[in-house]
Length: 387
Ligand code: GLA
Image (tube, rainbow, N blue to C red; front, side, top):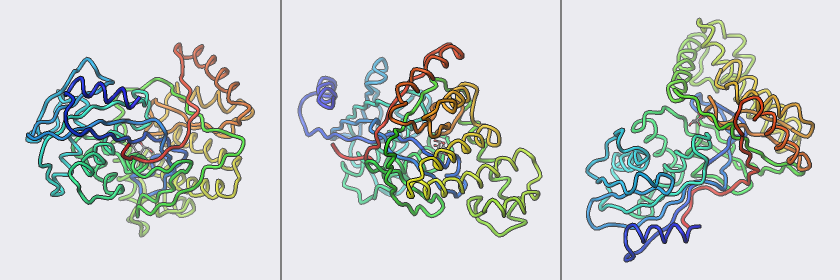
């Protein structure tokens, strides 16, 4: 596959010069959802699907981008002197945003690049294709220009570009998972301190199955930013009653004691989710380490209920998928994953149930919703790297 990308690269940009290849993965979050901008814990893992980049340095300041996923757009030509976001720039706003964020930190890009991109993350699936493109770009810049930046810094730069160049106020989870992923491990990350720990995902007789609802409701970014604002409002009010820096500082009991400080009922529910979900993520990791997979699955199910009812980031199609999954014996846990309003669910399914799961959920979903879902039995892969 990489060979094909190289051939395409040469066809587009010519044969001569040194060509370098990179990969950065997408991610799936097992538990700890909408906690990463609330000072809580997350537990994502990198996938083996993601974004590939083939790159060559230029002598001038031109940037040429081509995506195999958007062939019709052809080669998009721009320059290092035009690192500003624009509608016309389309997908190239992601790599340009990362370039902008490097330059902002004093890491000046001395010459232009020819770039070819290919991603095998299904479009709009919520498995972090944009974060993988950001981390990929960070890695390309680090290696091409020899900058001394760590992979954690690359994740932070990616988040900065997403927040301040591309206008989505996301947390650090997706970029961190894409940059720092480790084969067969999930990352238990404290988003308040960025302390992290790898936890081997040993499911013995079960697998991780991602189900793509193939719906993505509009206004995702604005609904996401609304949730953030509601949590910030709740935090401000709680801070008048109790000495905390983030919602992640509260235990469930402390939240229950002080929750009336939050005047709006909606903001109170949002904060409740953030507090309880953080504690669930902590407990889930303990359960996984102790080999208590059933307990892990139960926490996943509770996470879904909280995201559906208190945080209100699920949608009809996703709830259908989760309800169907919950009814199947052999499904240990199932929940919405990622930002929400469509996208994917993540389920832990016993090996001998995987086929039944796919056929039963697939058939019933098609009947109820009118289109097919897609299923991916996934492996946990490494973070961004040079190929
Ligand atoms: C999106 C954001 C992440 C995180 C999740 C929800 O994927 O990019 O930062 O907030 O939603 O957990």
